[in-house]
Length: 563
Picture 1 (spheres, helix red, strand yellow):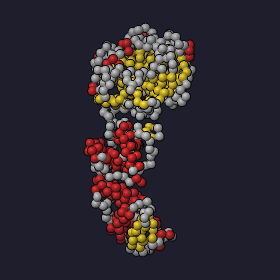
Picture 2 (cartoon, helix red, strand yellow; picture 1 turned 180 degrees about the vertical axis):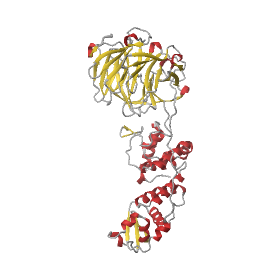
Picture 3 (cartoon, one colour; picture 1 turned 135 degrees about the vertical axis):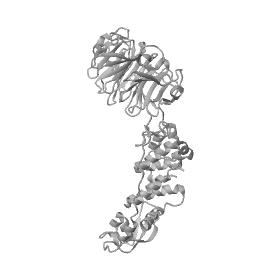
Picture 4 (cartoon, helix red, strand yellow; picture 1 turned 60 degrees about the vertical axis):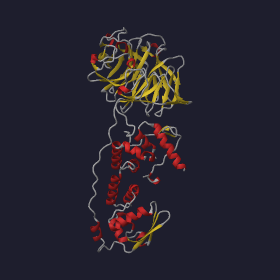
């Protein structure tokens, strides 16, 4: 089955890569949870990166932040890059002579904040222009509080921004402190840490760290969480008071467990789920991604075998090569991991299944009652009409106006008193074909539904006839067609019908087709139904992030259009 071109949305062709006009193809509304290519929790994939001069074999990435459009900003030693959802890399800014590390993005996405490890500064990057300015830090290694360049840092590593965008929190690894920077003024204060290498819990300057590395903030802004690199601990800092507690860890190792029973080995990057319930940790020297429950301190391994490598896979079948930094998608489904060699993605929340749907109920026929209404009603027209259908004006002759009027509100209006068509012997009908309009007239005159005999053609006829039933206000026929469409869902028709349902805004049929595809994915693939997709937004929703498959669909559609 193929959906009639008149039913398909207009779209722009491009040169592949899952993008239109150089921009990422948006997932069509209703398809945010993919079916084909849908990932499971713990599944690790590698994003193929492409630079201005072609594919990039690897990048040495230090920090990562999610942009507001499905892509990422990343830092290398002396540059800030943007990576699109399709893996296209462009340079945003360079900072020669520095060593950039941590990264955070402003609320409106117009600015990035970057820690400069060697220069002991925090820099601001304007996304639109690439302009780089130092907002705090004298350039000397120290721990003095102050405003702007009167403040000092010692090897600032990770940083995060408060939910309201007013403050940055910086893990000053060399100072063993957590610092706060007011974005508006550049005022720097010490939130926690004595400055001495240690692991004591406490409030403010009583607490001790050993090279705090990654830092993230809770969704409500009340607490910071950080990787205490030298102590192999996950620590919590209350923003209001500077009180520091240990959430998990305390010994070098790789054991899962609760609180101190869990072990880490040089953990660096850190991200928090959008609901604040879980931390995700780049356990660097264990080559693993770990999950920490904020409420209990329970630690589990999400992905990574422990061996250094780059294999994709699920859970322990995947490998990492020194994962460094993490960022989590806005919907909380995917972690982006900077590791040696490039950007990896880890599924942390499985997409929900397609919704279920209520059974369709077709009311009893009103044909006998409608025919009874033809008696004694002087407002009904008399005589017959001939329809000229479609561009070729094919004829349907000798149709009773009276019967049409009692069966369809549309015809009752068309042939009503005072309308020019009331006495017309011929009426022209555009934007349909003879077979479909004949099926409409046959239903009105006989109460019989005729969708033809050909199996694949029945679904297309039902789609076309349903559209006419809507136009001519014949609700029972519309329901009969909808019922026939539900009965037509099969491996070869499910995907084209799904696309048609999306185009028509038919949530019920869309839900049924998605459910069918989810339950019979192998048969649908084998039937070739996927190759019939023409809406790239739907294709991306079905295929998830398999952009190469979307590109292949696009090439096929382009070839078909040119044929």
